[in-house]
Structure formats: C-alpha cells, structure tokens
Image (cartoon, rainbow, N blue to C red):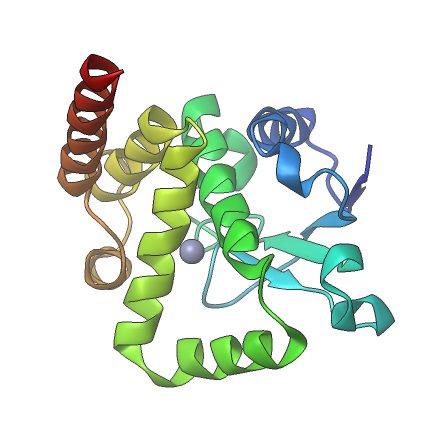
Length: 191
Ligand SMILES: [Zn+2]
C-alpha cells in the first residue's frame, strides 16, 4: 500500500481513510501521505507534494492534511466524528486528488492561484471534488458529511456560512444522484 500516515494515532481516522481510499483505485499507484497537523482556517485539504516527482504526472505524490479539530479547539474533534461523516470528508478530499491527476505542473500552479484568488473558481473546484466522490460511490457519505456540518454540529455560524457559500448543499447532492440514476436507467433501457 502506498499510503503513509503521519502523526495520526487514532485508529478510527486511519480506518475511515482506508475505507474511502479503497473506492479510488486510480490513486493507488501514487504515493499518498495523510498527515494530521494544526491548521487555522481549514479542517482538511488535499494538495500535490512539490518535489521532483511533482513534474511527472504518473509519479506525483499527494498529501491530505487534516486538523485535529473542526476549526476551533473547543469544538468537534476530528477523531470523534462519526464514521460515515469522516469517510465522506475523506472521499471529498480524494475527489480533489482525482481532479489534480491529469493536470500538468503548470496546470496545478494555475489551479492553486485560481483557488486562492477567485471565489467562483473555488466554488467550481469544491463542486468537482464532490462530484468525483459521488461518482466513486460515496454519495451517501458526502451527504452525511454535509448534513453533519450544517445541521447536527454546533459550529459557529461564520464557519457554516462559509461552507454554504463554497460547497454544494446536501439537497443538491441528492438531486445530482437522482439525475444520474435517471440517466443510468435510460441507458439501461436503451441497451
Ligand atoms: Zn474541498
């Protein structure tokens, strides 16, 4: 296995990551680092590792960083999140990696700048990560994550409104899956 856990003592986090990872076979030949570290503004992020392999698409390494808590220390601890929520979250991050795979080094650089500078670009990138996670069979998990963040958890409204601004809602995901199912049905009847 090409996964290296750094600074992650929680077996629950490791197990949830591996359950999501199993669903993304096209990532298995890439070296993947999962690292827990304090982060101020985000809970998780997926990025390519900038080293020599960065310039070779097929060899590139990726890193998924996660904080030890959701945004505020007194709030929810990541290792206490329910299994499906954590799997959904990891599936979203792996969705980002799927989005990075075909990009050149220059393309990734442009992506990074676009993500930081243009809200619309960022919204598009977040939607894509969800769509890739859904296409890999994680729709229910992605919905569980969104519902947890927006409905169940007592996160500060500031954090929730940022999520609402940049991310697809659970209802949108349901609609998307229904649309895909309908299309699949149509395909099946055509065959
Ligand atoms: Zn994301």
